[in-house]
Length: 280
Image (cartoon, rainbow, N blue to C red; front, side, top):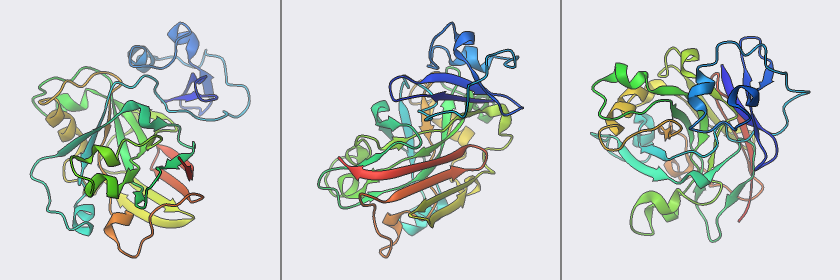
C-alpha cells in the first residue's frame, strides 16, 4: 500500500493506492483529517480501500507523504563506499544528527541554495517512517515491527557550513528546503528486504549516485534498535539512513550544485523525485 498527500503546499490531502494502482481519497477513512502521526496508525490498519472514492484525474503535486513529522533522525557515513570516498574511517557506532521537520518539502518542490553557499551537495537516502513507539528495543525483530514504511529522501547538505564553520553538522543540514521527501510512503509489508534496494541520483541528467542498501554499515533494523536506546521513536518520526557513494564531497572533479541545476532521485519501488535548484 502507498500512502501520499497531494495538492498545493499547505493544502495537501491524503490519498492511498492499493494493489490496483488507483489513487483514492484517504480522508473519509481518517474522519476528514490529514495524514499525520496521530492518524498514521489508522491508515496503516486499513484493509479495504477499494470502497474509497477515486482521485479525479492524475494526482496533482505530491507533497511530503506525512504532515506534522515529529523529528528527523539522520545517520552519517553509513555506506562503506561513501565513507571510503570521503576518506573517513568506518564508524564503530552509528553517527547520529538531527534535521528539523521544517526542512521537509515535497519530492518535486524547488530546493534553495543558501545565500553565500559554495558547496551545496545532494544525498539520496532511504527514509524509514516509524509506525509505533520504539523504546529500548532488544533486537532487530522488535525494531522491524516498529517500521511503518519507507520513502525516498534527499538529505541536501551545505558542506562548508557542515564541516568548516565549527560546531556540529547541523548548520549544513538544516537550511530551508533541505529535505525533499516522497512521493509516497510504501508500507513495510511491501518491502521484504530493506537491504536490497537500489538508490540513484542524477544532476542535470548525469548519474552521480548509483548504489544499494546492501552497502550499509548499519542496516535499517539495527539503526532503529540502536536509536531506541538513546531517544524514544514515535509514530511519524523519520530516519534518514545514510547515502551511497557519489556525492560531490567525495570527488574533487564533481561540481557542487548551482541555481538552475536539476536533481532527479529514485529508490527501487519508492518512486522518483525531481527538484530544480533556486536561490534563497
